[in-house]
Length: 270
Image (cartoon, rainbow, N blue to C red; front, side, top):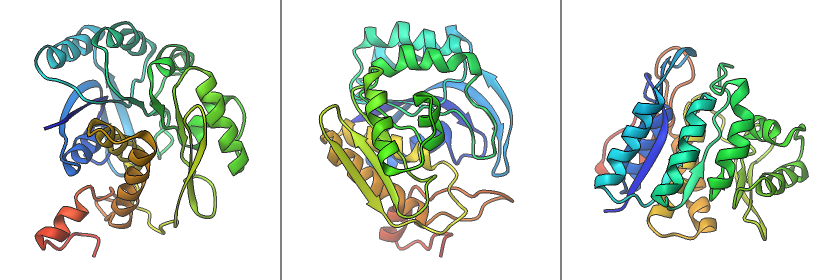
């Protein structure tokens, strides 16, 4: 069985963060491993507290995984502080990681800053060059690029800019723009557009984590980048379409909607 490692924060409500990553890996037939970088107190309404894991414990988790288990892809999610970014940048290359997907988690849907202000430059300088793919949404790409994004042409420019910063490829997610949901991939040579209908649902908690984790799972199974993104986009769209109400706020996407269907289980979105 192929494996994928998520290096990310924990979501106590189970819809995003490493919990979403592990569910996504499992839905793709990939065994999930994890390094916890932070513990958040959150639910469907918002994020209320963050406790960062120490540098020593993060490095110990990473060493323990690599000492025992082959890792076929790495997904990096929430790395909220500069010290964590530096620790990963100094240690991860020694493990010769395959297929590093970086999801630059900066702000939660409720507006809580998940990346400290002094960590943004460290992420750009130290983690982007390690990434085979970076997957920012529009606000995150705006932060990385340093200018606002209003159009498809702006997204294309942002993708090129992020690759110029050192990443091998960039996928700009267009969910924050109006119209069809268009994501733009620049692989250092060509631009690729991935288009899907916009799904009218409030239950989108964890979509960014889910997409990046699905890409990592597909890469772990040996798929080329463009195909890995294409299939991950389709999977995430299905998970959003089957999202369901849970709690009083933004409900989660349904990571196992296809498995439920094949098993004859009625899911909560119906």
